[in-house]
Length: 82
Image 1 (cartoon, rainbow, N blue to C red):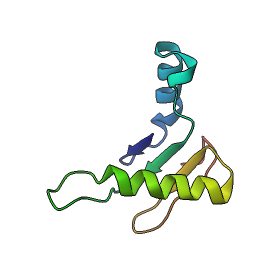
Image 2 (spheres, rainbow, N blue to C red):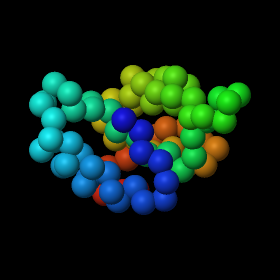
Image 3 (tube, rainbow, N blue to C red):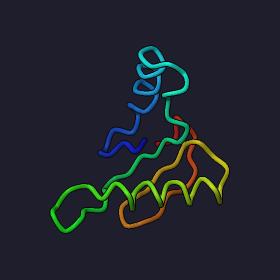
């Protein structure tokens, strides 16, 4: 799951809410926060590129939580760091 915007502090609240509402098998295993997202030719979020970047970072860094600053790549973060 990738969260966008300036308020990454909501990550903990979102994770807690989803855990209360969804069965365990449906919970995201990777969490990413991005200041901006890639757009496709139609101006919509390019989910494939975004998720590919997140998965690549997770394979290389062995973490569940990542942050991507403007123009950068996903790097590991602690839940309270954003």
